[in-house]
Image 1 (spheres, rainbow, N blue to C red):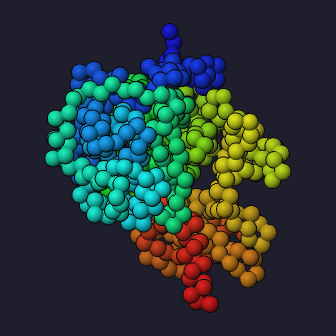
Image 2: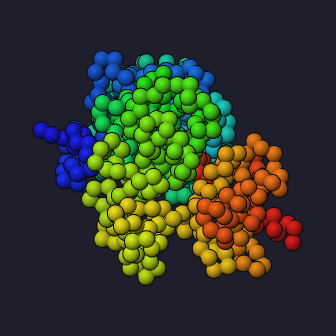
Image 3: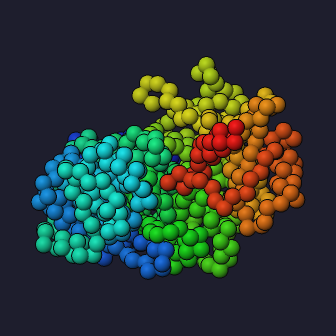
Length: 519
């Protein structure tokens, strides 16, 4: 029988994709399902490779489906010995590693709820999440163990080599017994430590609808070798970079350690990856490394998410890898809804666009009154779900061909002297300057215009009036006379969310604090 994974065209996606066809890709059903079984256990076949650990220090490691299956089963038995019961939370704060996969899949295997936590969280970030999800056990490394807040009900486990070896005393098989609607994962979005975002709660059956993004957002198929360098503490790295491809039996690559664009380029060649899904920042860092011409690549499909990719980096991707980077748009709360169908030969990828809706989804651009906007008219992106329109809090527009275009976050729009200016468009224009490595634009108060554009620029070139003038003139020539940054600040780095997106809100807060201090 033909499965959805056998189709690659856009036309076939529209003709054949359905909820029932998605279920055909799994062993489980609407009553009984377990993510660990679907991603790991059912793919055990000799020494079949599951995960390639790409390490910043170059000491890469390969894990087989069998190793993860047996190790996660042993970890599941360990949890039961520790008094962990189905429904208890097990937090995992580790870089991609053998211990990470054993812990995440072992927790879900025995019915506990896995809670991935970002390894760079400080004491406040950890404390807020621990207080919120109340885990019974937290698995981490020796460096972070002392930072975890001490509570009477929390057991902290240091997952070093000795601990992993000690699991060998437990059986290498665990019989899963979870319902499809049992909770499996709590996923936090990348908010600040002062504003803890709600945990998005996923059941085991969530792996089924996730395959829409895998099939059409990242274009994953069983024959791929798939790399996603995003941290598995976040939605892109966990769901799209880990769970979805593993559920197809695909060999995945994960990145551990301080990110380096050059190191990623080396890994693409060394491990012959054919499908890459990364954040826009990752692609920019590969471009800025200057090392792209040193390597040979085997990529056939590329995708990005998190924020729009600037046009200069998009051109670099196509020139370097021979394929366009395909946008995958969505949020942790609503999932992926707009994609560019990587690998579909009959889907023309429009550079800069968000693509078109995932099969079966309704997405619209609406005005403030909830009316559908005409092609070319900006409004808010909304998704039809469970009988109502859900706001994404992003602006956008649709063109005459039905492609969606991003207009920035609603709170990133700058109104200056009555003109509406998009921060993303200004940043894209600034990034065309050959000496600019990164850029962010926000609105700052101005007595005459209400707000004016202020740009924050990262560059190796020394700051100076001539450089500022070049940046301003470049924006004027590409956009319009009123959209250029009237203020330009040169900074060593830009604040980013833990997921790697530019944190414009933090820039606005810093500017507001500076204004108060100097008032």
